[in-house]
Image (cartoon, rainbow, N blue to C red; front, side):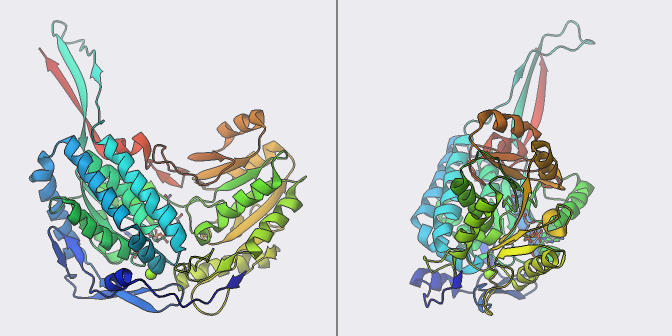
Length: 501
Ligand code: NAP
Ligand code: MG
């Protein structure tokens, strides 16, 4: 577990983009914020400023929503047929593929994550997802219904439903997978014929701004996609409260999700929320220890633990507990920390000083409540925002480190003996995003799946996401689903048509 010092510098293409004066995309124009102000963008591996972005305010959001409204109501976009929308989505996916290395590099520099992960997970999955959604453009269907109305006894009726685009979509996203989270919202919006205003996270707006250029290059009409950068409490708040927004889609913390949900109700704005998690990893007694340990390590340390569905609570049958923990600790100890653009790095820094303080605060709280750090246990190095991959044992189910989302590379591990006990502990959380089960005992697995209160249950894998399957939370992990056919439902309204013929 060492921090690698590398002198890798950005490629000419990425450096050229980073060095620009960044602007926001509103309608057909790249513009400064009305405030005239900018916000700093830091490299989380060093804390140094790498760019500045416009500090968008309510007036910018208003212009962006107006542009999106005009594009929705009266433009080439509103008259476009589904195969044309499909073709445009493919064109955008192709452009992303042509620029995949630059996009991955920008993501890595801005967020701190490994550039290899950025390319092969973030950007590749985003491209796959756009192509999957492109197919949906031509497959949006209603139902034909044999309708009858008792007080119209003589009428011959023809009833059917149509799915129509919901309208102007306002999207607000977190910083952990900046481009991918944007695309999970953009894909269904563009497949269904909506228009879009996005407020990326202020820490990580760069890849979304580059995406805006590719959207223009793909040939989307002006105003279909608008990007307003800035602070959540300013630009984000203005987007949430804007009466011209028909649907909000948010990825972020449960705390902010609740605020947004309450505000959305004032305008009855449609809403989907992808929120926090504290996902259990359950290792049954028959499991292959090496396989389960590798999966558990990936489940918590991937992206430095900054994953909504991170497997942050490990429950292992007591028979194999010590061996499993020893294997995970071995994996953690072999990890190389460093800046993500070095391809040999396994773990990048956390996103910010705030997250570094928060995660270290949780580790300290665990230790002060009696936990033992098998490995890790705090900050790594004294530059940038690195935290050592950490495993805490001797933890109590009711302690803060087990109950609250840490959002860092910190695993809590508890042994169990009885299956009812592990079900109770796994479900003893306000969250319900994901869970994984490690076993080859088919009967035990199938009996366990229905008992787990989570939006996704993975067996012998963790956070495996397919574009064709819905993803989202039970309980306080969210409302609605992203991806799969379910995404199309959330970006459309159902219109009922009843004809007396
Ligand atoms: P966050 O603080 O909730 O911020 C998310 C976004 O909301 C940012 O763009 C933020 O703006 C904005 N925002 C903050 N306050 C706002 C307000 N009052 N009105 C409107 N927008 C506001 O979350 P985070 O710390 O960035 O991300 C970590 C959280 O996201 C974790 O809880 C994680 O589990 C969750 N997450 C969930 C999923 C999922 O799919 N379920 C995926 C990824 C992450 P700023 O840029 O100013 O912060
Ligand atoms: Mg940054």
